[in-house]
Amino acid sequence: MTKKVAEESLGRTLITIAAHPALRNAGIRCLKSIFYHFFFLQYKAALLPGRIPITSVDHPLDARIPFSPRWVGIYLDFVAFWVRIIGFLLRTYRRAGMKPAIDFINSMGRLYAFAAQMYTKNLSTTNRPRYLAHPQFVLIHATDPHLMCIPSLHVLVVIRTYTAFRAIIRSFGDADRFAPQIEEVTQGAVAITQALLYVKQHSINCVAAGLYAMTCFEGTLFPREEAEDWVSRLFRHTQQPTPQDSVLIRNYIMERYIGFLTEAEQASSWEEPLLGFLHSCPEVLS
Image (cartoon, rainbow, N blue to C red; front, side, top):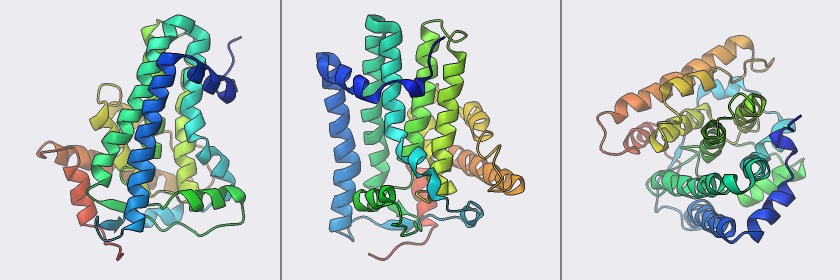
């Protein structure tokens, strides 16, 4: 029986990447993109305030999602989540899996650069609780200035992971063979997205913006129909938020996502609808 993707060894995957020149080079390029477009740009903005506007993007429905610290482990798994995909592909397809794995790594680097096109024009934040009772939250507050909320890179990363994984598996003609793994990774993306809302790292506005940005980045893998199906999974089997509130949340995310798509039809760039939205929200004084 083929094991779950979650059972892939993160350490072994990293060693494999480091040991193979082509994988290693792709990994280095990806890390450079992540550190520059996420950490460097964000810390630069935090240390040199006033150069880029910062907007508050909370939504009233966020209050219907309770702050739940126990979800922090799932939230922090989002990097390992996509790295384990590489391990699965390399272990399953060996040499044949090398090119798709490299392409996937490269796409992650491009994804961070793509999102940064927004961050260099307008930063955004949410009302994040100052919760320090757990060491993982101390790590979050120490390393993340929390200025890059729209579009949510977490949402971009997990959506990219499940859609690319499914496409790669299909390219090998193994959609039926690995149907459980495809569903596992899809549900993993749902769980991480729920987690980032439970730990208050993002607003539902950030989720909608992330979905829109992903459609702009890779519309063939994440068209509107796919977004509708995926959003329908959010909070489907939870007690909090309540089923009634979950419907409101899902409906709002889709309405905001479709609104961005509609505005993009007349826009000069993919960022324009998001910038227009941010301009309608309150600015945070530096």
